[in-house]
Image: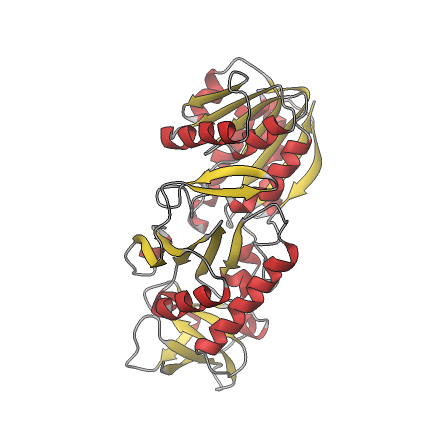
Length: 392
């Protein structure tokens, strides 16, 4: 695949010299003619010093995403090597009673735009950028060779595809079609995953460690799980001895799957309620209190221009949740927006606690599990943050 040249404006080379993998449109002085979105491109400073090689998309604000900071061939062997490195990391750390995890995590595995999730005997993939889209056939072949599986399924329905000028696509790429629900194991528990119509690639794999944390403190507690999706936190809590769980979710199909997850794990239903409702409305109308409240909302912030508005939303939902926690109880609250950094998120929770008149102590801070690694030169990759707080 051909590569072209890009020259940066004077003074714009410093992020790349620090191995940050993004080049924004405003940093570019000139690009060779005759390119297509997804083409390989070599990036040079204004005085023509080589900085890195990646792929180009002029339709994106992030115009170039770097694959390497050395002048090396970007070919099938390059991608095979990077994928093998990612798979070896998972093999070293994946619990023996877990067969659902992220195998490739975009910039975190030095493959920007590529997501590969394992669900039992199936792989679910996302090609989130024009550069990775161009290598799709090659990448699928590598995955089949390096991680034998029954099928490779594409779940490219994310909004970020549109920002790259790409159409959405959901369907089989190789092997066998996955069943309507794929059965997976996580820390010894069983879950059903809908890879076609479920959120993200089907399951919130990035909350695996947090689910185990919540399970470990749930014995004897009444638990409220907000934005519960298919009941992950609730199932862990119930299995670990919670006396009651209430799962609140606006999607009926998700609640139906949550019920199947409870049944699959042999958990009695009467003590574990499923409530179809908007979480904001539920928290405002609910008069009950709980020993443990889990607040894991979808991202309220899709761009840096939405930070202030999202901050108000996070404060509001946490203020409502704090009113439902008994004195001496626990709130576990999360944000999955990369535009809300950990310091800002803690400041938002501080504001909610102050307005609620509650005293909080942070017991633990949570982030990504090992299979969602963060490239230290790419702090934007640290999107998930959580606070476990005692509430008085």
